Image (cartoon, rainbow, N blue to C red; front, side, top):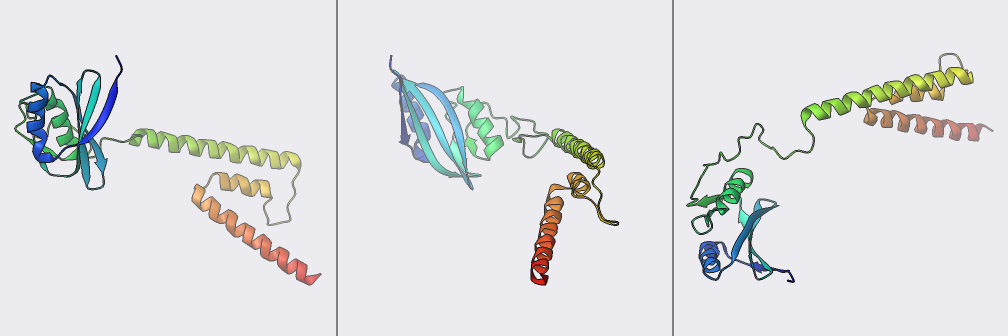
Length: 193
């Protein structure tokens, strides 16, 4: 069997009537999903019959909008409707099993994060350890090379070792200032010759 898919627009007012029509025509409910947009979502109702996956798209549903539930037609839709209510703020009127916004017990307001605060703290700790090790290695290399700087000045290796332990943004600013100072000094040295 060859599978095909299609995307068809659907108005918010026709969602329930279309679900009834699909059931009467022998279509199987597949899923309901929300596509996040700025200040709105697109709702995509997917039905399948004879190898055709028909995706009915209700575009630009404002956050906080109310849509007719199809769970009285396709009971399994209550899961997706409750999830979209909790995560996207679109309410469904007449859900057969309505969790009233408590389908998920969320410990944070924004549960969809890639890195937890603990993981972020551990990454920062490891970055600092690596920077300290690099600084120590650079100091050893400078000492081994016998890099002697004029009194009161640091060698480039020692300076880089210190910069490695700094915040990356601050280190970049210091490097840029040092480069500007070198350029200015080179310019003044060229004029004096």
